[in-house]
Amino acid sequence: MNKPTKKKVAVFASGSGTNLENIARLVQAGKLGCEIALVVCDNPHAYALKRAGNFGLKTAVIERKGFASKAEFDAEISKQLKENGVELILLAGFMRILGPEFVRMWKGRILNIHPSLLPKYPGVHSIRDAYRAKEKETGVTIHFVDEGVDSGPVILQRSIPIQSEDTLEALEERVHAVEYELYPEAIRLFLAGKTQQPSLRAKRSNP
Ligand code: GAR
Image 1 (cartoon, rainbow, N blue to C red):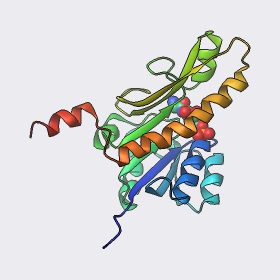
Image 2 (image 1 turned 90 degrees about the horizontal axis):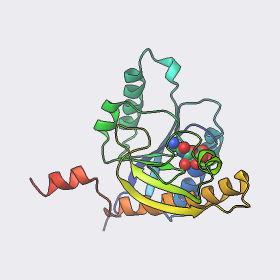
Image 3 (image 1 turned 135 degrees about the vertical axis):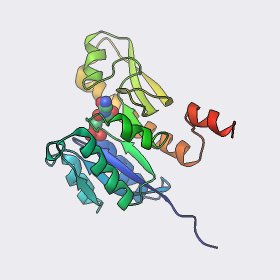
Image 4 (image 1 turned 90 degrees about the vertical axis):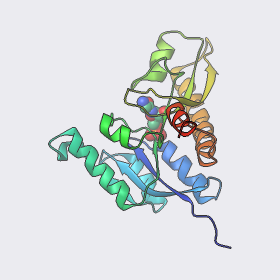
C-alpha cells in the first residue's frame, strides 16, 4: 500500500527563526507529519535563513522593497507557494502583514504564533508590553490568520504566570519554551483535521 503523502507546508520567518528551527527539527525526526516545502523570508539578513540552510530547506527571499505594491509582493509569495505545492502556511515570526486578498485566498490554511494571550498585546513587542504593564500573566497563542493584525480564531492558547521577581529576559525564555511546545501541538491538531475555522465549518454543514 502506498504511504499517505505528507502535507507540504511553508514556514514564513523574518528574524531569528528559532520556531522555524524547532519545527524543522521535529519534521526531520519524523515527529511532525508534514514536509517543509519552502521557507519564505522577507529579510535577506535574517538568521532564519542560516537555520533553514542547516536543515537543507528550500528558501525564497522575497523583499517588500522589490515590488511596487503590496499586492504584487503578495502575488509573488503566492506564486512561489503554488510552484512548490504548498498546502499550509505557518507564520513563525513573520513580521509583515499579509494583504486581505492573500489572506482570503489562504483562509483556513494560515496559522500564526503570537507571544501573548490574544486579543491582549498584539503587535511586535508583546512580551515586553505585558511585562511593563505588570500583568500577572501572559502567554502564547496559536491562531488562524484573518484579515486583522494578530487576530483570527484561536486554536490553542497557554497562559504563563509573570512572577514579581521576573526579569524580562527570564520571562522571554519561558514564553519561547512554551512556543516550542504549543506550535507543534497546534500543527498536529491541524494535520489531524481537528481544527476548523468556524466559517468553514458552517459552510460544510450547509452544503
Ligand atoms: C516569536 O516569539 C513569535 O511568537 C513572535 O516572533 C517571535 C519570533 O521568534 N511573533 C510575533 O510577534 C507575531 N506578531 P523566532 O524568529 O525566534 O521564531
